[in-house]
Image 1 (cartoon, rainbow, N blue to C red):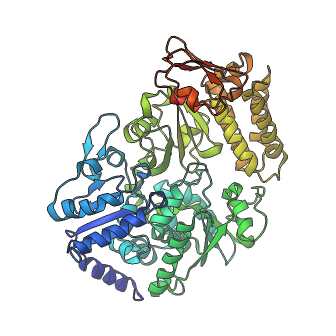
Image 2 (spheres, helix red, strand yellow; image 1 turned 30 degrees about the vertical axis):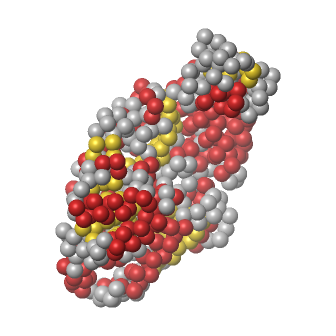
Image 3 (cartoon, rainbow, N blue to C red; image 1 turned 180 degrees about the vertical axis):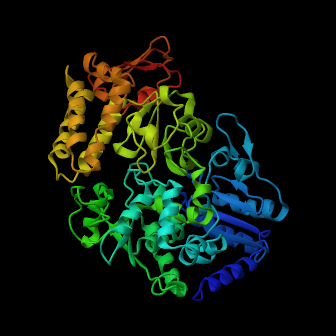
Length: 617
């Protein structure tokens, strides 16, 4: 990549790259995000290279390794351009057939196509897959188009044009106003208006100012920021460059957890490429504006996702939050004015500057503009990353995009906002999803985690899981969070293990109110959400655990008993053969019984019974 010294040279380079590429050439794109790495995608890449050469198609068919496409549950994913033929769950044995049938003879391989789990409709082309077709992928969509390690690829789709526009056609104040006008709110959890945060930092006193990208994503089941930084690091870097210019900063940091090695690697490659091209460093594009970015690896502490704890960690101190009476915009990193946004927020900025605030603000709701990327996981057919406009309903996300609940089971609840979010019941499934509506029902947007639960989920056990997670991640600096989470965990353990008492529910509610009011940072203030929301919407389950010593979902081992229905048991012996503690007895073709004194309640007997003879009480 040659160095570019002006806006004109940048546009000339972009045009040169585009002219060298034939949009009608056959191109095999292979997802190489972390999820597909687990499926062995790099072996698929090597196999395609071998088979294309063997078929004599070298130079006629291109190969591009891309970031995460979002449909992680169906990986490894292969999309063939220009038609965008979509193949899913591709294995090594499929590669030669794809090359010889699809690439050479334009034939479709039916078994590799996507079939909708509810309607059984088959989709040949990527846009026709409901998972993709019902989304609005203005931020995440480019992941499937570019090689994340290639600056040329990013330039070819218009990369850094928004930065050049801001740098040469807009004053810093105008950039801030455009972001304010767009209505963009922070995607990291708090939902604070991004433009207002930028304005505060720009107006703060001090010659030295910092910008920080928070990539310390720690919510269980959430990986939106990880996949964006892995699959399109330049979109994040371009957003940071625009923000730095608007705020008046010459130095920035990406704080990314060390458990994200691919994201770290791709960010490092992108930064090196930008410096080589003259788009990062001193006197960028001859404008007089200088900016540099460093990568700081975090140790994986959940609390370091909180802004002041993150800053403390960069400074080399223990990652503990501080009181918010002094804002980062006034005194942040090393006491200097600092602006911190998360990965997804920064990636929205180039789109806003390129297309304009008026275009962007047409997407979403009155108080929540744009799109949001959610990590859709749990008891749902189509798990993965989905980008949808603010205001879409939970039903549309879970059933239209997610394909509904597997096995014909009944939808019960969805937990949004990570471990500090709330559980939303089926009765609210048609509510629109935005910052304000989620808060109204006792949950939150968070960074975008969305965990679907079915009828087999125990809501008391769910609350216990998240409280235990937060208890382990609390820094312990303030008493309400430290002691409140410990006491909540103890009470929930008692309830799920048959020691629940009258008054426990009221005590949990009282603890939750105190923690919300008195905790130092957002972790403690939102930690009671899983408990309070499950009590609000599923109080009957708490009461069944306490009063009847019964777990309605059949999850809490201390409160369940496995029995064999003699009218349904055929005496096949499957339960007896598979029982790990030999607690099942019975003759062949005769009803079997379970010795309750030996049963460890593992559930194996129920799993292997083909006649639904094993019941849970």
